Image 1 (cartoon, rainbow over the protein chains, first blue to last red):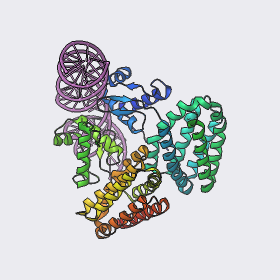
Image 2 (cartoon, chains in turn yellow, purple, blue, cyan):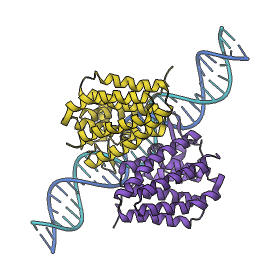
Image 3 (spheres, rainbow over the protein chains, first blue to last red):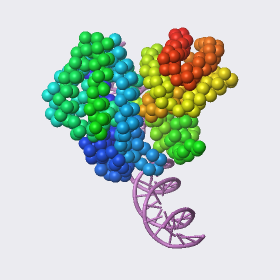
Image 4 (cartoon, rainbow over the protein chains, first blue to last red):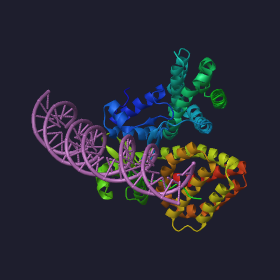
Length: 214
Length: 214
DNA sequence: AATTGTCGGAATGTTAACATTCGCTCATGA
DNA sequence: TCATGAGCGAATGTTAACATTCCGACAATT
């Protein structure tokens, strides 16, 4: 069973590199992303860079302004609240779809990611797995537009976790794997009510932990 | 009270023209959008056209494939179901936000659009006002990312209504204005429970009417 | 007859040069 | 001292030419 081998243009390549760079802290919130600078650093022309910045804007990782270029946005408390509330309704739908009509193997893939979290290396790896876990849930939901809506805020959630993780790293890495394991179990049992409750508690937990002290 | 006079580039201009053209039926679902052709027709170069197509892809109005160009997608029954379910959770949140913390003037703006629907000209104008009404609700919600999520499917909903409107135009134009008036009234009364119920019935009504017979 | 290889045309992907816009600085004036 | 305007520099917006990729048709081979 082969996945479609799609050819990617330079733009996608550049977008991925930029995303990694932002997550790595090379371009912290507030930093300006100059097209010529990026083009020179990556060894491509401004075209693909421009296109990549547009894609990252769609994901909320950069802000684009007329004739003023792209900058990495700083997430305010209000932004965090927006992400929290929007994520809640999206994830509720995802959980309902997944429980209702996902293939068993897709739900097992979710559980498999949850297991990997138990032996994550550092906090950054944990965050990556956290994102991967939720990706798997949306994939199991089999809802293209829901997945697209998630991907529109996914990077922002990722960035939020990375920037706020220092304030309580211990609690985060300690409780998170176990929580995800329970989440996966509820999904595999196709227990919608329990799953919805657990996911809500999970989000509330993470939100209180990370948004409160920032 | 002036709105910010923002300078728009050619790309945005092109995107709007293309959107109008698609809604007008110039490019029906399945049609190919060739960059050179569009650039020549609009009197600009391929750069802005490319950027515009990327923006329209973000809105789901065109599909872009590697080295195969852009096409107007045809909406299947599954697509309609996806739009319906996603729209439901987004609009629920929008209504809750609007009832909870919208300014009175924003809710009056919603009602004002609803009133204009009573004296709409043709069916196309009615659909435009329908979209405008829901735009106003999202604007009243004051939730930037929720609004962005709506805008990601807005054009698809618009196109869906336009393509399916012929099957039951009479029912659509007949009942819709009254329904929206009640919706607006519930919002102005800040009656969350009633508003949520009415919006759900509204969507169910439109979905049954238009998706069923296609 | 069916499959594979090759070729041509057409469209997109990419590049580099040109045009435009914006923020900043500094001089000017009241 | 503050407000106003011109000019400069830097970055983005736009363009047109070049490179690459893909699809379809047709020929060759088994």
